[in-house]
Amino acid sequence: MSGVFTRSIEGGGWEIASWRGLSASPAVLGYVWWRQRRGTAVLRFSRDPVASAQALLLLALNAASMVLLVTALQKTAVANVSVIMATIPFLAAALGWLILREGLRRSTIIASGVSFAGVVLTVIGSLGMGDLVGDLLAVTLSVTLASLIVLIRRFGGTDALLAQAGSGVVLFAVALVVADPFGMAAAEMPLTVAFGLVFAVSLILWTEGIRRIPAAEAGLLATTETPCSILFAWIIVSEAPPLATVAGGLLIVGSVLFHARADLVHDRVSRPWLRPRIRPRI
Image 1 (cartoon, rainbow, N blue to C red):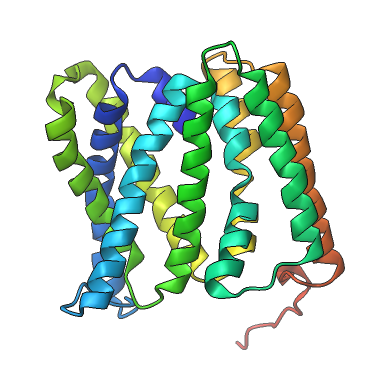
Image 2 (cartoon, one colour):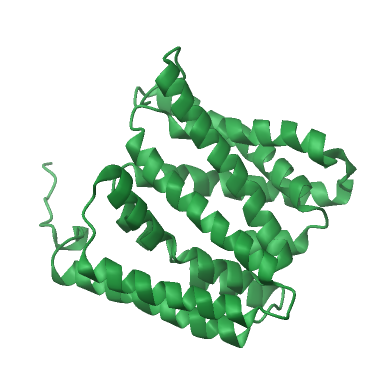
């Protein structure tokens, strides 16, 4: 829904991103507090300099991704951003191989090459249309989010959600210096707050899910966002995807499906629907 919200709110990229992050922070912090009450929290911020540095790195990357997403959506088509972001699983797989030493299979390499061709086709389609800056911002966003996927798994002792909740507050403080968040019209605030709450829910689900599965599989599941975001933008704000983006998107989504099929064939993913059912005792 990010594309729909961004298209529907009047304001600058910094302003929308800062209010979105600030609106999401209380909801995420509330979830962290509830999780700590249940005794399932990983680790609070501590005096350990290593843990603090890790938390600050996650905070900075998440804050950067907030601004990059909104700005990219304002400068290019929603479909372009969604298609380029579909390459995140392969970027995460490459970074997972470099940082986590997770295996990089032949099917992943092939799918990565095809998806890269899809990105090139999407970017070429934007030449001369004034969308190239937005496409490049989307590429930077994809690298940033892939890094977050890998680092959240690498920094297992750092509470990623707590760091990401703080990123909304820090982003708003930075926006006070480089932009004018209070200059947004009051009529835009209800939709902006709703944008933040939707973001909070997705952030919680995304971060908690990343901890439980490999980096490549986490990115692979996240690609379901691509067709949904394009479809919602088309239906709600009447933004049809460019032809080059459709072609590039088919290449990328096809590579994702190829990669998923290879995992299914070789039993590399869990299949909960095949587990035997256990009848409860009465």
